[in-house]
Length: 292
Length: 237
Image (cartoon, rainbow over all chains, first blue to last red):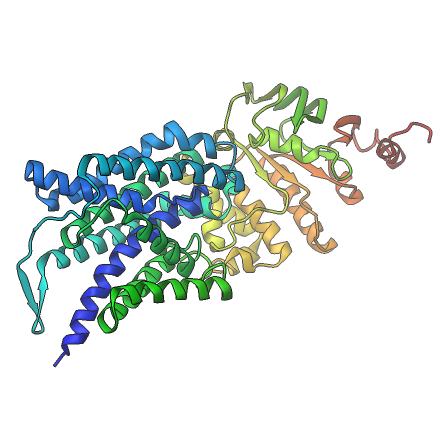
């Protein structure tokens, strides 16, 4: 007999872990390839959530469809933003200067995104009811939308893993992460890799937001929480280590689920930040070293 | 094959390379000699497309390299083995080599090129599943050269290939370059600090100091005394 606590904890871990992994991969992939440090990762999550909410409440478009729509739309937006803005930061090579300049850009994106959403949707909590019917898993009732969130999220993470395992594009991305100069010398068009990375990264962050809108209520300021979570996951997994990021995301999900279950959500966040701080002190370059 | 005329490269407002003319003929080995900071690396990096802004002309097999980006120049058949090797340390030896053949022309000949590299450096085949970062210095240099060969180049350029290596390993690397030129028809351009052993193998030498070519000729035309003098920068000193 599987205990109720175990089932609940597992589901909550997977829900939170999937979201954390998605934002973690989004942040880590972008940072390790281009040195653009996206402190607005959470804002893309937030806007993704509002987009799906808006499509559902205004046009009755099923969130199941919106998840894919949001992923595609924000990937395109990412590609356009690369061409318009980020290319200038990365085409002369990437360095600390790229990081500093990107912080300014992303900080302004935070302000614009939050205020735009407040104008359009006010700053109160929003949410909608979709696939609320419960599914019985080992005697525990779980909302169907949570299972959808887990399934869609894990599928996207698996797709990213497979993409990075391909011997052309995947290997070229890993090569660019490890040594940008050498990547150019072997004939990799690093601008194309940058374009794909920015596109994928922003698409994934918004996709995570779209998924969470089925399950959680949200307001214009949820972004910070997800940005910090993404940073924690990147630090656990190690910069440039995408598999480590998946493990880090699930680990943070477990801490979050257990903290919420046995104490309270507030305590769960405190524990997460404590772990983040401890890892930074002991292993500032991340728990896992290297790629894959 | 490679014609450089009136090349001037500025870095941070300073002329690192001044008015350099340099010719590399097909199927020869050419060496650029010069002390640390003379501008050798800058010349090679500019040819490879890593330095985008320069004055003067670089022509390769009849095509100007102006405006071409590094990955396009690799596709045209120029490959640089950069200073300090610049491998992908967390990837395996095999993945490093496979990345060398990233361009489409080379990808089609992947297995043939691999065989050629393993023939030249059998140790790489033994280490094929090992991470590049775990190799010894000499093995890393062999891998860097191997990775370059994988791109199926016409011209292979090496930036201080002997730096930090034991004399025996250096000898091995230079004899491999000899084979590349004699048997595979490659053209070789090397930048080195003084290494007398390398000079005898070269068809042509350029001596560079403070960004300028101060002497050039065949090894027999440029006796060691002349090279020293060029190094010291003063005639009759």
